[in-house]
Amino acid sequence: MTLKRFEALRWASSFLKEHHRDENIGEILLENRLHLSRTDMLIENRELLTPEDEEWLKQRVTEHAIKGTPVQYMIGEAPFYGRTFKVTSDVLIPRQDTEELVYRCEKWTERYFPAGKNLSVCDIGTGSGAIAITLALEHPEWDVTAVDLSHRALAIARENASDLGAKVTFKQGDLLEPLKNEAFDLLVSNPPYISRPEMDELGDTVKNYEPHLALFGGDDGLDFYRKIIRELPAVLGPIRMIIAFEIGAGQGNAVSGLIRSAFPDQIESLSVEQDMAGLDRNVMAVLRKK
Image (cartoon, rainbow, N blue to C red; front, side, top):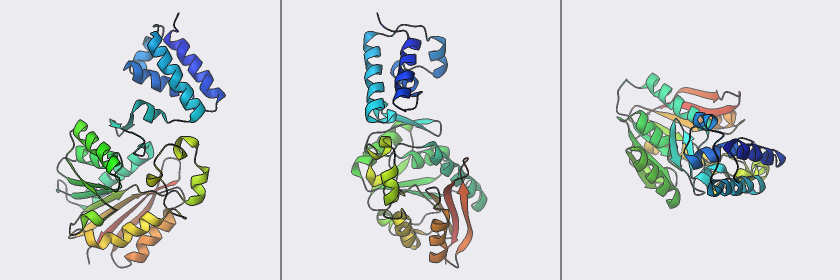
């Protein structure tokens, strides 16, 4: 006799709680397995599971509870900005925090560029392509280019762009190196920013599974900001450029200080933006062309 859906979810919640994991993981897994919305799951929660579905759920709940395998990698997808993106262990899992970066890109471009302008945009360290693809879909008139060092990450990003119908140009290479002799109005990046001490403190679901190439930002977590800022003059737009960085909590002063030092007489605007929890989350800047 197999379990009813609510019985299976009750077991999953209890098992996850015992192992100090998110108790909602079982519900996320089962909704994905059965292709049901949360509402449909609640309405039909007394339906019996098939033996295959029950075994699938138990295996994955156990794997997450014992090993910490991220649920997004188990189901092969993650939500971002109202869309679903394919993810594998070759790419960082898109976070809700990063949606704030996309939102701020839109607001700052509205403020500093004429409405309807065909902006040239680059996303540095694109990973799954979530940022670049979202900007391209929200603004089809923009020319969006995405760069990543990892061939495997770019393969996932290209697949996401194809599946979602986004027009994005993908380039493989180290940060701004593939973009030499091009000019951009908006540069957006969520680079690796975890410092060496912080890497040791990461939870096992991140440290043991997500690509360290997309996490580790050097001893102080700032290596990639330094490199990007150093290379910025080569891609600065004809009039001005908006810089949009995601940063780690507490890195606002350091990253904004790097921009001030590099461009003391070109800054139109510079701001450290906080997330809903009141932590540093984005550094936004507008640089004038010399």
